[in-house]
Length: 235
Image 1 (cartoon, rainbow, N blue to C red):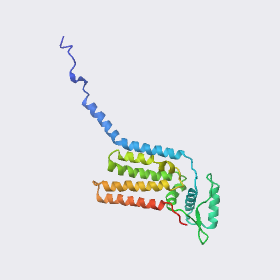
Image 2: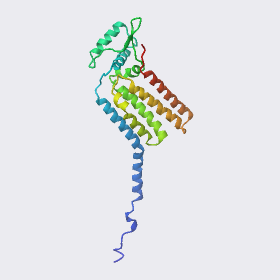
Image 3: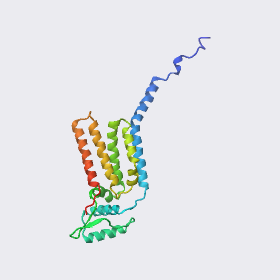
Image 4: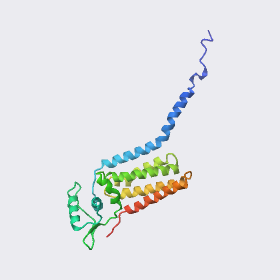
């Protein structure tokens, strides 16, 4: 009788090894994708905040860039007096109004923007597609992607997540990303993208020299685009 009522074996409470292996197998892929998932959430939340803001023209500069983008849609950088007057009237009739500002009239009577034409070239395709507000976010996404790989290589698994979160929460991003006719956020994003690519090319010593050279060249190409976007006076 005592044999029938004796306590259960001590190892009865020990988990089944197969169950432990199953749980570990589930946790491992989740742990791997978690940093990328959080970084993606950062960017999606940032994009939602940006697109929730109404487009505004708070200074003369965006009017100059808007006119350059509109002129480029017709293949023009310089405008004749007739083209200038027609475009100004067209822009005045939009919801944002304002016409053309900060353009310079040359000695031959043609008009040209005082601003560097780099950003209009990068944004005109989005404007033609009716999605100009997505232009800054597109270049912001490139920046986040490059910083993700660069910081992850440099700082470890969570480095990319912290880099993306920090960039998307900066004052520059929050203030300028919703202004699609200003180049400031795109300029900063191209610099950030170049920095991320450059970091990756320096620290990814396990990759071939050819790949690192290509990535490094792309970094300097991004820096070059940033210089072309930086607005300056041509007057």
